[in-house]
Length: 286
Image (cartoon, rainbow, N blue to C red; front, side, top):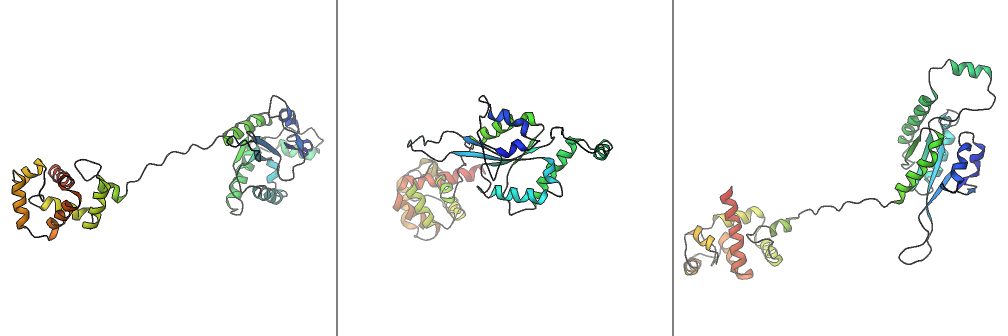
């Protein structure tokens, strides 16, 4: 729909045929108190349930450089504030016409002479007013953000409305957020056969204060408790599980070695050996 008052506004009256054309947006004329144009988006039927839903539409407020005149700026800001209160800024936009069509009405000779002597072109005046509106709204925290769409000339109104409405109708492209590794996720990677079994990670978090404590324990011991890993035995200087069992019998259950013995008893020799393999390999690389 478009507001019937556009017919009385010289700046926009010539654009009405393009708004009502069947090949265009095909809008109906109505009395709109808060905005100038409303373009519906998509069907008004829920595709999942088939139930009728309220039609979503984009509402537009049409402004010109004269809207920023000193005598009109307060009225313009009040209208924008009322306009923003419709949805809190959602599905709203302001179209700012930078260059108004030449007036065909009578103008006094003094105004014509003053205009002829001015070095400011209509386009420059329009851009100045457009910038002034943006700067003014920045200092108005009571008015939510509303995009201001510059319109070079009235002939491009239909294309601007169609392009902006189409982009608003499309759902926003939301990129899947990359997963952030937490402490437990990092702990599950501290094994020669990742990922670590979750139960093992829970047991480690109970036995060791932090990763530093775990790393120092795994790199300081001379042999894993009854490890079945050949690489660990070779690094420690033992060749059979009997050797490690003998050492296991003579080492008290205190300190880091005692923690690893408890880990072995809770999760098994293989999980314990893979953990020590990882830290020994990392230590060697460094």
